[in-house]
Image 1 (cartoon, helix red, strand yellow):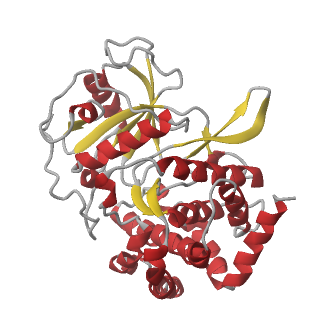
Image 2 (image 1 turned 90 degrees about the horizontal axis):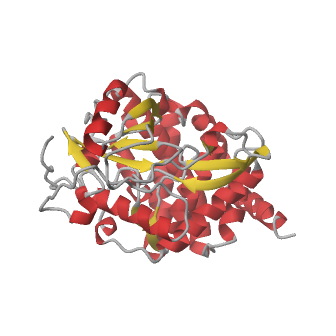
Length: 382
């Protein structure tokens, strides 16, 4: 067990060639969980993850851990954080704090669990240190599992998209009361405001037409979004509201009638523009929808979002560029990360349909897209 790493690189951005994903095997998880949390693992399933390693575990109903007397019947998620974020105990504390805050406000999110033994560290508050622990170069945490399926596993419907927008807005509204000094200064390659940093990784996009499209999006960002950034409303956001992180569930009497129930994975939380939250949500729900034209997903998400939050004219003015920029981030970083970690097919999730969806979306006139979204929004007002 190593000591707490220094936080000198707390806001360091990922650099080309840097390998940060944990080198942990599935077979090592039971021993790790037993040592840190006093739980006896009976099954392990590796979950999709980008830079971290996540595992779903089921455990025996008894434990000697005095902090976990009521064990979750649905299991737990073990999160082994990448080496870059693991250097930042302030970030981990902020994630735990946000999840506990939202949980207290009635938003269904994972609830962090306490390790078996309390460990005192001088450089981080004792309350937060109880919620994560170090092994080798990586930070390890577990949280109870939010019951249900991820949205990606069920058939998409306009109602589910509407509910995604509702949850995103409700969460953003609650987070208006959440304060964290560290998150105000967090730097992350996945922050939309860092879209210009894609120039460091665009070499991984080998196709000339795709490369040109990304360059056009970066130019549009610089010309249309950057000048308006100081005018956009800001606050704490989730930052990764996507189909892999949205949980849906159904009632036993109607198992095919799914509804959005929870949001997971707080790895990308940040202080940023609220319009980025809705743009990220729209982009990910466009990728694999087959039940409607991909762009129409944005109208249904916005209809749900606008039920609880409004958008200013400035936010409407940059929304299309923000959606395109998130496509660019996901596609460029996916291509780059796959070069670093060949065989990790999860890194290509966006690429399977994303390039074609983005090409259609980006080639459509901006006002045509916005008017279509407004028309869908009006259909919910009847």
